[in-house]
Length: 400
Image 1: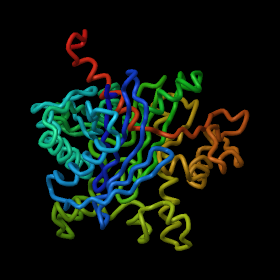
Image 2: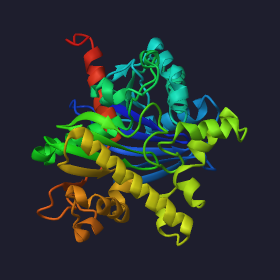
Image 3: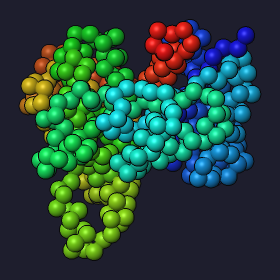
């Protein structure tokens, strides 16, 4: 008898991360991970299961609908995990707006609502929509589930979510939503498992990757975040600007004559660490680069992270722990040290040796604020959501 297989799709602007999970015993158990980089030539599907690694050439051209590429990858998975039967696919969807406060099974109405939010997350949302549509074409009877980054932040108050704009705009959806919610959900859960006393406190978590944000957690519940209406907001990122005086946008258009498309391209693709350094949006590259531009970019990055952490501590009314996660947060001691140095006045004291080792707890004994490194796993959250929704929709289920 075949064991049920669940896939997770975590789509970037030009990449697709695929998680493979067995759900034979209810709780998703990881089987392996795959990745497709749509900008790479020749195109290939990279798969590993912790022991074996495979690089599978993909012959299909990359088309807008992604049918050929996705069909090849799914057929390879079917052939090489033949003891499993694919039962569902869970998607990370960056923006759910006010329409979604938790994971949902995707139907026509859900897909239309997701597609309508493309303008608010133009880096990620279009790819998610294409993948959902491609799967509906290739495997029309396969259940698909959407997990939304914004849903985790629905616990924030209207005070936190409101802009100082005409009141009617708030009711029309012009408000702060927050992102990276799947990552923060995982981190909050991991803290409850490993450090329950810390998890019950006031925590600022910093998700630092190519996209980056911070979140204020009160006993694991989101109270505030650095990102707002769109994924441009907050701290500088690899190529995104972060928080920006709205007058700059008006100046670029009215005085310098740039079009809306020009400004959008610059703010999303030519700003952030790349824009300031003039070298790269990759913090690893900048750490190895001796140029003044690289130094300025990294200094600004740490400065803005620390400033945002302090603001979020004010929202919480105190700070018990600072948590770093995602690629930069988990693997760059230099960035953590630069941020923590600026937060010493809040009671943050770093243990240099533990920090250099990327240990789980990197604060000194006696530090008023605990500092932790918690690897995130968005795919695990997506898999759990998909399994839960699938179970709730099953015939005979109480949740049906």
